[in-house]
Image (cartoon, rainbow, N blue to C red; front, side):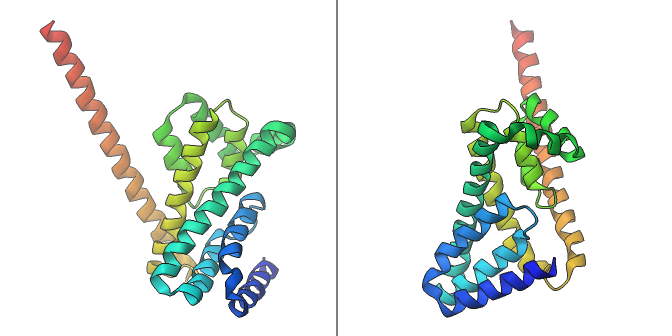
Amino acid sequence: MNWIYELLEKIENFIHTNLWIAPLFSVILPFVEAIIPSLPLTAIIALNISVLSAAFGAIPGTILAITLSTIGSFLGMLFMFFLIRKTLSKKFLRKVENSNHGKWFTNVVERGNTGLMLAILSNPLLPSSILNYAISLTNIRVKKYIFLTFASRIIIIIFLVFLGSIFDIQSKPLNIVWVMLTYSVIILLYGLIIKIRNKKKHLNIERESSTE
């Protein structure tokens, strides 16, 4: 893995000396990461923030890094989605079947729970490539896939940008525990809101049926 970080460092140095290409690379690198899952998304986003902040300033650079990283990552996921569906479904089916995450997520998709699918896809600690392989092999509608993938990419990238800056994951990898705890709290709150909403809906149905 060290060679990957060394390569990213060389790319970053090259971009810093040619800042006019920073926006282009800020799309290309997340696109490639979506295709080659061994590449570290956190390091790529940190690189994008670094070069775009140098080119446009800290706040505009960070906003642009989030935007371009989301676009690049989404396009890479979408490319793999259509590639798997059209040509390589059998090959990737074996990868999904050999992965506990893949098999589990396939069952979730087939049940059609949009909220749960979004929560799972938005978890930066789960293998997004395997999840993308799994969802590509289901009968999910393209419009729904686009919504889930784009929304989850935005959430993950914003999550990594802001929590990465708060907890300094790059230099202190153990702080990933705090990221996981924060994510868990968000998911628990989301689940609680959904539970309360469903309970209210159920009570309203009971009231309507009792008044008839």
